[in-house]
Amino acid sequence: MAFPAHKPTGRSFDAGDYRYKTFSSQSGKEHRILYGDKRTGMTLQLQYANIADTAADDFITHYDEVKGGFDVFTLPSEFRAGWSGDAAAIDAATGNKWRYESPPQISSVRPGTSSVTVNLIGVL
Amino acid sequence: MAKVYTGRDGVMQLAGTTLAKVVNFAVSSNLETLETTTLGDGVRSYSPGVTGYSGSATLLYYKDDNNAINTTNLLNKIYKTGTSGVSSTDTVELTFRWVDGTDNNDIKLTAYITSANIGAATGDIVRAEIAFQGTGALATVTV
Image (cartoon, rainbow over all chains, first blue to last red; front, side):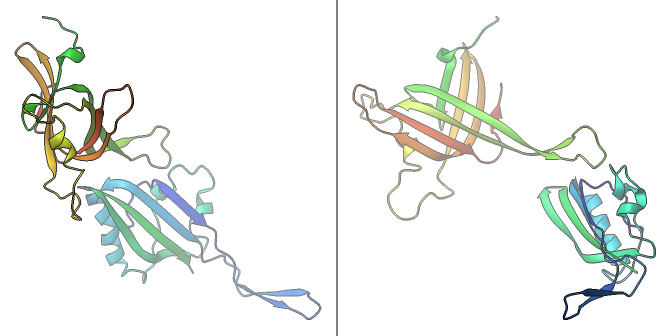
């Protein structure tokens, strides 16, 4: 099963960074060494408020299928709902795929209705 | 026959007994709505959540010919001696009725008295003001 194709009600994206180290000389001049040419470590939080329990459990099913935070995966286009910019801008950058940064959190709202929060991280 | 109801048609009952000297009452129903709007939607959408009932009433503090106070069984649900406070058995069965001859339109519920206010003021009649919070489903709705 692919990542559930539900439209989120909230989305937060952090673009990550390139891998480099910074060294400061005694004079104060900063030197940086770039270790990779790909941006990584981007994070994505998706919120699905007040969805049916039968939709909420899709995230647990997928979480099991990818062995929790072990396997990587891509996201369906639905996660970008409402985004009118470049599709790639808020997706895992070139060479990256998503994995779970933490287990999906399900909050029960009322009988049959739950809210789900999913935290993902882009890895090379 | 067509009818516009007025305050004269209102009746408040406690456990099936009409309370005397009720000045006013109000019963509110509220529905919690759960927003289901997703990113990309231009119009908000909602699912129904949980419904609840609450209200308030004002009664004149009145002693009848048998020395019975009309507000006793309401006020003693929240004005209590001892350290136990209010327990789950301290509910009241309230009926709010709008009368048209023999035709009654009722809202009946079980409720906790959540606040009560009674005092005395020079040149004024003593009133007891109560607020209640319904618990569980309505027992009767004929409105």
